[in-house]
Image (cartoon, rainbow, N blue to C red; front, side):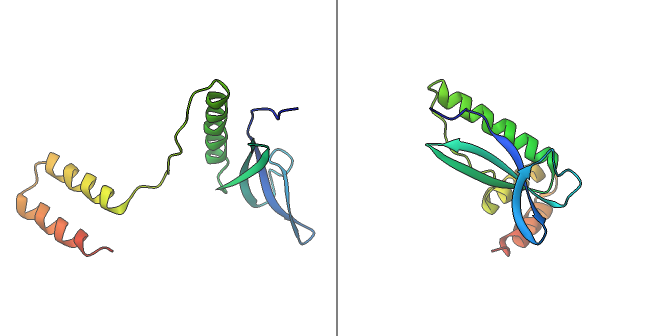
Length: 117
């Protein structure tokens, strides 16, 4: 029997000195890390998303959209939520140019940002 196409939120907490996963609703007042869990290709996937409940709910909803799209036959592309440093610098320099700063100020900012690894 295939698993339901649904993601859920669990929380990794330490109870009696041992780490375990519990449904997030059961351990609201216990410090821990939220984990989005779902079935993919017959395997249980647990993806940690941090300590913020809102972010965990957002990631759960995002994963449910992806699972429903795959079930409907829509191909999905894995995206990395992280941005590259060079892309961020390029966007920031473009933002400075839109603000009508002097070319000298923009060049100084570019020189400082070029020092970053």
